[in-house]
Length: 329
Image (cartoon, rainbow, N blue to C red; front, side, top):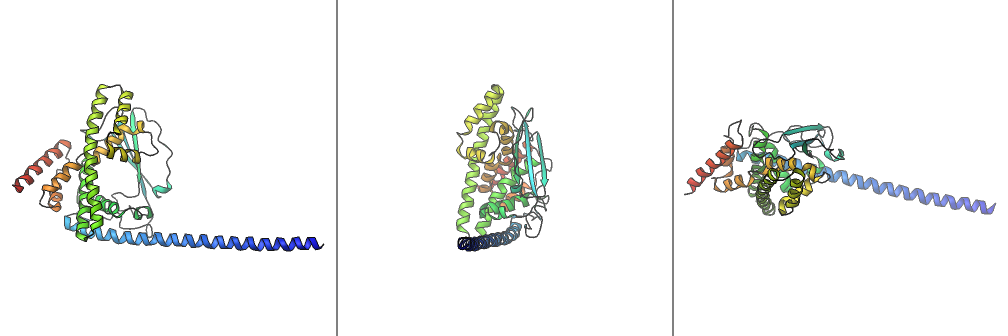
């Protein structure tokens, strides 16, 4: 009997200790969750203030603000987009738009929409990308966006606002090729305006890297075009994928952005996607060095015809280069 009672008392003591440990663990977890929630809320408040500040500044460059990213997940439901680009095998969108481009909206964060893989689509290369930030009033600032670096956030805010129809209302591939460099250049001006030396340095370094990315992409596209025209398809794709490693900056971004996708499957679509964004980046950045100021360049580019194609854009950029060069003499 004494042994049984002793065992029972021991069990009660063990149970008390276990219960105390569970309560402590729950308390610590609750504190961690509360701290995380407060940290997220703080980041969102800071980003909301940044969005407001950037949108106020961009007016000085002749950019009309939009409602994109004006709200956060604290006061609006999240919406994400899934974009697909499809390009016929053995071809690149060099002188015309990507063959097929589509987007699907989801009432959730991109982080909550995990894609397993894209299966083969006969006759087409396929590349996909997910995002919470896009040019639409329904695009709101998420915790993931708030955790991005300062330069990245400022560039995105400017980029999406430049897409507003009051700024540019052009065919998709033409508009992206203009908006992408202008967003990066405008970010530089924002940090100059703020006197933020450290982020200005980062923004300038980012523009330099994007210019080199643009040059490497254009060289790679020329090589890929030649191989597609002279080699059997699979052999050409193999050689192009091997050659990507020779373009250090492009290769790094290519590998990062196709993570989880098959390199051979995405090749033509990914190169065509990148051309839409970066084909003219270096050219437009060089123009900004000759233009009186960035506002003038933006206003001049807004005069492009609404139905401008690649030939029209290239001639227009050449004319601007001649005009700006003449002013420098």
